[in-house]
Amino acid sequence: MAKDDGKVTWKESIWNPRTGEFIGRTASSWGLIILFYVAFYIFLAAFFCLTMYALLMTLEDNRPKHQDRLVVPGLMMRPRSGNPFLEIDYMMEETESWDMYVQALDEFLSPYNDSEQAKKNYECVSDKYFFQSDSGSVKNYPKRSCQFHRSILGECSGLTDRTYGYGDGQPCIIVKLNRVIGMLPGGKDGEPPFVTCAPKIYGVSEDDTETTEDTDKMGQVMYFPPNGTFNLMYYPYYGKKEQVNYSQPLVAIKFLNLTTNTDINVECKVTAPGINAVNVKDKFGLKVVFRLRVNSRN
Image 1 (tube, rainbow, N blue to C red):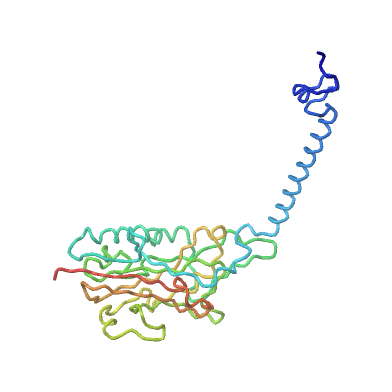
Image 2 (cartoon, rainbow, N blue to C red; image 1 turned 60 degrees about the vertical axis):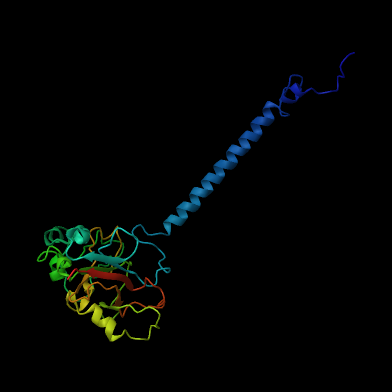
């Protein structure tokens, strides 16, 4: 029986030799649709590039356009132990228990060596902001950075005491404020921010003061530089790209007569008139809390 001439086989649905169609379209039809999609995607790519170019034109190369999410800078401490907790716990008589803290401080403070600072940074005028404005379209770039001499940290510099007091039960810790571009921590009046450390009492309100017992456990502290101040000459900060050699100012705290074999939770805070501490409940804002324990066999 002859095949029905009007019936299209599955082979002819892919390639029809009678009409010259491939998958239902002639060569001219395929050419037109391919040309359309090529033009369409070229237009989309060009439009995307144009919008990205317009967006990048609104941004600055050396600093973020928006910083409104960072309200209060955090306070960081050194040395850090190998675990994720902020704690310093060691035995005075066992050098290997506190040597890691000494090594961590040596590594952290090495860029602050006086010789290194003299090579790459500028000797600034103390106690006043170091503004470095652009002159119209002429960019003041790269901007200079002020020297922070390691020797400013006195007994906690590691220069006079290579153990930073850890071998004598008088450990040093170092704190620094996180960098924030354009921040003036001293406010318009130029009052330098300063650090204070006290026992952290858990389970009481912020308005309650620490008990005499807790204060006695922590004992006296000594600050370097004196009064624990961050000098204003290190502000404002202009960003990594503009201030390549910027050295963050540091404050060292030396604990003189800690009660041994006792856990002491210490809270160090920064008082900065120029920072609007609206997020006072932020546990990282302008403060750091850490556990300190010095053990002794005596």
